[in-house]
Length: 166
Length: 287
Image 1: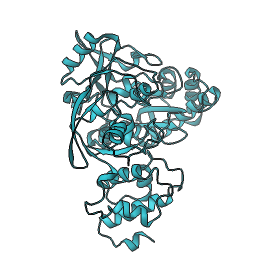
Image 2 (image 1 turned 120 degrees about the horizontal axis):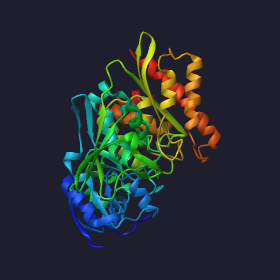
Image 3 (image 1 turned 90 degrees about the vertical axis):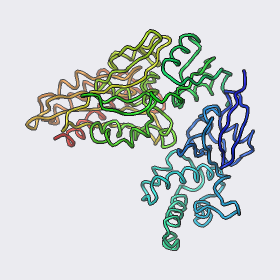
Image 4 (image 1 turned 135 degrees about the vertical axis):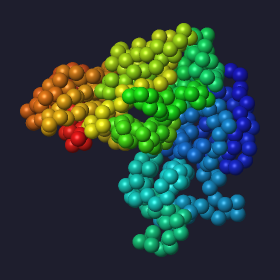
């Protein structure tokens, strides 16, 4: 099958690539761009480990073709920390609040939480739980993931983080 | 999982898309949000030779009032339905239903048109469309025709769409102000299809039900319009005995399969329970 030429922006960088139409976005990100932060978990659009931000939406990159992302602006976990390595508030929150054990779901959780906080900077606990309902974690019971997102929400709103860590 | 190979097309207009559908024949499928079709392609349950991506057709998105109707473009996403102020005020049952479909990521991408046109009995919007008396705008190479949602569903994944046709918009008669509506869905977890679900819209006059319509999700090969159940409650004050009769009438037309969500007998019973709950909640919201 003829390959398609696509241009898009990934983590702020212009990317031009040839893809087979059937190449899924997750395979394109991981295998052609070597961005292995987005994970393949269930591969059936349930678990959310492959979540990336695409044109201001959280999407499951296992359920989209790379050709559909032509012209898009994509952010993956690799694009979250500052260029000098300073962690994003969400990454810091997951570290500080023990929001991960094995870490497999974490890139998807953080990318989903990132979009949630863009839309709702101060979500309550219910809103956080509904907001991450498309992401599965098999280690933590979600408690510390919720706390990590609360930590980041507080930090990003300028509230002293000690309060968030109560 | 890697789907079978296909050729990818991205038309810029409905006209171009239906010309492609006609020219490429039965092996071509339109691609909306893709959250039903792509998983099926990954499992090789679907293997279209051509995908016609509707994502580049601006005229297929958006929500507008047209006289007494609300017209929603087929490519409008569930996320957009949830966020829309007009719908929240005039047709809140759409927001309520969209919120129990899948999960946030899927709702950003999944479309109303895909949900109603796919013919999957597990999809939630078709029963709501039967309940509301919606009409689908359908485009083909020969032009546009309109199909009543109540005549659209023929079997699991079988609809009244002819080869080469696609749904371009959904037209819903706006319910009168003061109506009450509810979508009650029993599911095992977030993201699940319904064990059973019911959509109800009603109006009241002097404490009695003046008009009522009921749709059922995932308890048969197609969504069901529970006409008899709705007739039973018209004129009543929704007393317990009448609600029980309506629930029984809904159960009588349900013919669910036994699956992981429960045996057929249980799922049929739950159709009645969802009708009773949706009636109560719709009544509590009606003026």
